[in-house]
Length: 386
Image (tube, rainbow, N blue to C red):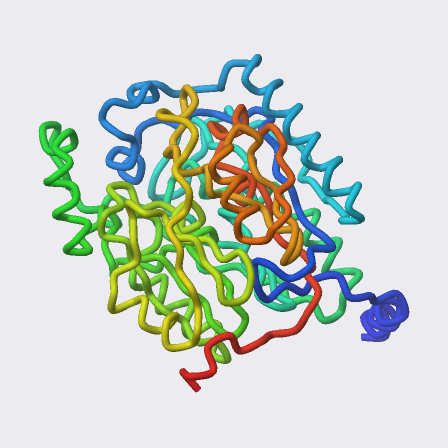
């Protein structure tokens, strides 16, 4: 006991505030940026079978990604880190991990893992807490381990930091709906959209709690969580109980045929202003909470590209997947000229950088990052709900 007391006194003497972030737009001071190193296209599994578009060049492909694509992404992500540092932002990065090996649990095995480019998918920062998400892809079950050394270092230095992990799911065959879409229906967009409008997703809603951190939009006292392929109702309920001082809202976007993560669909730029993917609009009844509290929801600008890059899971709407430095400055992919112009029209100062080669490794600029520290406190941006 004396040893433990001595350790606690040492920690108390060295403690400093490291983790604090309540929203997506307050001034950014500290961030984690992922890595594309050793990233794989994972083997087919129940979670991904119905998430990959039927005409995707990734269909039937798995294994390590080509080295030249890794090098191109490394260059872009290193450049992003240099840019952030030039704005006085501290950047941490996970150590490279070999994602190419077989993994096993008592319920499944996967020939390879995925990677750790999209830190936003795994790590959810709410105030002084960072929560490791359970994940719904088998290939991503162990992905949290890439960030363990970083989070442990925060835990040692910041006595107020709460380091949490959601229950790890089984991800057995019972977690998913079998024969969710047959081969013909996968190519039939009307069949797919019918399921989206009925909130009928491949993951069962109450088999076990599932959510990816990138399905959660943080707006001070309120958390908006997308119900879709990667987050189920049990996951949303788990978040509601875990954050009892927050209001947790379930949202969905019925015209999104592949509802995976919220940050290429619904993006807040500053208090009171959100851009919404115009082909995946938030339903009117769910917009009410925003309109009743003075928020403006605008259609995002049209993407500059008609197709995603090769071997990319994501849609062309990564155009709106930006990283906000503060309420004035926003980092945007340099080729997305329409999105850049919209930011200017809205009174912001966009910072264009190349990032399109990184898309295939897990997403855009927001996806690649996880907040550690943003200035400010937990504000109530929806006072009419109180």
